Each structure stands twice: as C-alpha cells, then as structure tokens.
Image (cartoon, rainbow, N blue to C red):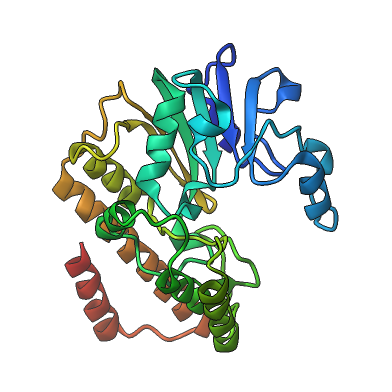
Length: 302
C-alpha cells in the first residue's frame, strides 16, 4: 500500500471533504473526482508564483477555495458540521496550538467525520536532533492562547535543523553525514525578526515519533482536551507515518506504559542503527568487550 492509499483508506470519495494546505501536491484532487474544498495560505495564482522555480509539477496546483489568514475554520468556511473528512499532510507539526487545530476541525466535521494525517517522523528529517514534544508544551500553548511560534521554539528550530547526506528528509537506511543548516547568526536574526515584527514564522513547533504522537492523541482525548481517537495507524515509511482519527473510534488499545516503552525503543533503535553505521563506515575491528557494554546500555533503554 503506497502513501496515497494509506491517507485515503478511510476517505469516502462520495462524501464532501477538506484538504488543508495541499500546496503543489494535493492528495485528493478535484480533477480525480473528489468533492473537496481546499484551504491554503495562498491563492492558486500565488502558489504558482511561489513554486515556479521549484522542481515540482505546477499542473497539480488546484483552485484554492478558502485562503486562511489565521481565523477559525468555521468562520472561514461559514458552515458547521458539514464535512465528512479532512486531509492534512505535513501540516499539524506547523501549528502553534495543536489542541486548537483539532477543535477547529471538530467544528466543521460531521460527528462521524474523520481526519487523515501524514506526519514527519522527527528521526528522519531536519528535526532529528530536537527533543520529542511532550504534552506539557502542547497544553500550555493552548491555555496561553499562543497563535504564533514562540521565541524559544524559533531558537530551538534554527539551532538544530540538520541535513543528512545533504537531504533534509531521508529514510532509516540513508547513510551520510549530518550537517547543521543554519548558523548562529541566522538564528539570532530570526529571533530578532520575530521579536520586532511579531508575525507568524513558518516552522515546526512539534516533533514526533510515531508512538509519541499516538500517546499524545490518546492522552489529550482522555484528559477531555480533544474529541478524536485513533482509527488506524501506519508506521514510518520513508520519513513519515500515517494516522487516521475520528470521534467514533476505539482509540489506542495499547496500555500507556507499553506505549512509553515503545517510544523509548524508537529512540534506542535509531541510536543503535546510527552507531552501527558509523562503526561499519570506519571499518573498526571487532571489540567484543566494548560492543557488549554498548548492548548492555541498549538493553537498559529497553
């Protein structure tokens, strides 16, 4: 099953949907017969101008129905409980208030509506060295009504953006060196710009592994902060994973403690893979004592 099939698996093509921020690559395009409305931050003409010098298929850019300027989706669209589905690919990690995003979706979705998400796995993209987002930051941002990325988020983002083998996204089997993308001076400049202009700056606020996201959705639901639960989950392929959410779902059936262990395993597995690659790259001789001590540390992680 390819990425498009995973995202569309629970989408009713005969229903009415919203795709948020498809940019130059819609998942459910109108030209394929989907009854879909598009929300984006630019008009079609502006998107064409923005991407004209990029190596992308401009013919895929479709008419934008609603140009979003930060208002609630229900105010932008003018309809409540109207849509059967929402698709958002590589979008939610950009939102300053994750809980508010789900609240916005809830207002325009029917009670049996679904949200289909494609989300970058922070282990395999430019967020690689940033910490996994914890639930405290998500809740604090919501209750503090933060609608723009904070100075701290901007600093953390620009200080830690990396490439691997000169790519800003990769898969688990990619070999190559990491390199910082932004200088300290660039970071300071971005911070000063945010302080002086107080405008939305487009970057990743949240960093997830597959199971860290699943746990956050589960906990936010149990705490009564969002109404959505997990319908289906597909693990990372390439640099992204896929989750479908709905209000009539069973949710994650894995116990919380097991999910926490699974998150720890995700990080430990990536650490082990990276260490093994470096060892093979340097053609180091076998050192059973050192390697056994390393395995002991890995087992402690598990």
